[in-house]
Structures are given as C-alpha cells and as structure tokens.
Image 1 (cartoon, rainbow, N blue to C red):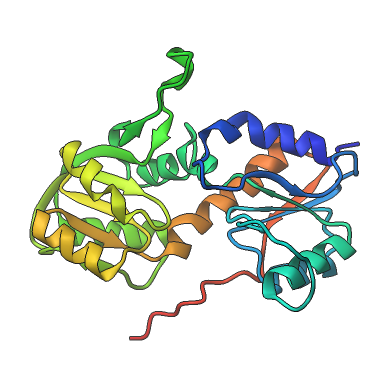
Image 2 (cartoon, rainbow, N blue to C red):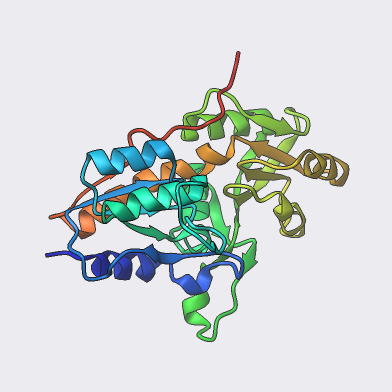
Length: 267
C-alpha cells in the first residue's frame, strides 16, 4: 500500500527541497506521512473549486505547485480564505505537498519542460546552482535559456500560444524583430531579464510581469512573451499527474478538472 511518505520521497527525488528559494515553503505542508494513499490530485493552486473537487472525489493527497500556507499563520479558522481552505482539507484528512520553486529549477522541471516544448537546443539554466557535488549540479538552476533557428518574435509568440493552448498573450517588443536565443522563467519571473540579457537572449518568456518591468525590458532592448501565470505552469502539473501514475500504478492520479485560469482573454 502506498502512503503519503512514498509520494513525498518520489517528489523529493526529482525536485529536492534544497533547490527551492529561501523565501519559499515547500515539501509536505500538511498531513500524516503514514496515511495510505489511493487517490492523488495535482493542481497549480489550492482554491475553493480544487478543495471541493478533492473532497467530492475522496482524494487522500493534493500536490499543489503553489504552497498553502505560503507564509506563517497564527491561526487556522474559517475567518480567512487560507484558514478556510486548510480547515476543509484537514477535516477531510487530505494531505498537501508543494514542490514550487524546487520544481521550477529541477533538471526536468517546469522551465526545462517549457524549453523542450518550444524545441529549443543547447538548453542551460540562466543562473546555474553551485552545489557541493559538481556533477550533481549539472542542469540545475534558475530559469532556462535555449537556442532556436532565427525567427520573428511574433512567430515565436504564436508557437508559445500553440504549445500552451492559449488564445492570447502579451508581447513586449517589435513582432518583426529576429530572435535566436530564448530566456525562460515560468510564473512571474520578470526579474530574469537581466540574467537573460547576460546570457545573450533576445527575448524572455515568463507568465506575467509588472508594467514597469515591461518598460525596463523595452528600454534594455529585450523582448518579452507573457502568456499568463496560469498557462506558463499549469501544463506541468498535468505532466506531473502522468509521472505519478507511472510511478504508482495502484494510485489513481489526475490533474484537477475544476481548476481554471481566473483571467479570461476577451476578443
């Protein structure tokens, strides 16, 4: 019988907590490691819809990219949104695990999956990690950068939209400009424009960025492709559900069917 500890060990094996940012909150955030697991659901973020689905489907464990709680809490009650979500999950014996930034920076993590999805070559971290074991550090680090055949920014943006299955996205820069090296930072990684520039990138793909970050990128001469925070990460939680199914064939695993992007593109 698979238990919570087994799932935690697997997740830790390819997205070790040591890869997470200092400010992050990763790992098993709630639950008993000895509890048995027959149903696991992945999601980008724990929301009311996700919690209700987990309860209705008798889920034992939720693997969420974004941690809950993210910051320390002094009380858990239904007086706050976070408290209410945690109370419902705990009351139904549902464990919660988050790999978050460890998953972003892992060898086969979200940023690498984005690079692979775009068919980039010579993919490397934008900011490599330097761990004690030099060999084990290879391929680990913040963001990614990779090369492609020279292509117009607008065409690359269309490729991104197709891979992420979005109907619209934002672009900073001239759609006619030519790019051949792409920087990547899933979620909200506008601060990567500087490391992307140092790595010779002409464009940075990230989910979202602040207005003034877009202005800074424009002034620095680096383009940006912004498909949305949700789109830039959610696909990887669907892939993770498949990986967990392969690792634990006796456990029913799926990506939340009720989760959706809170933002809608209007034509």
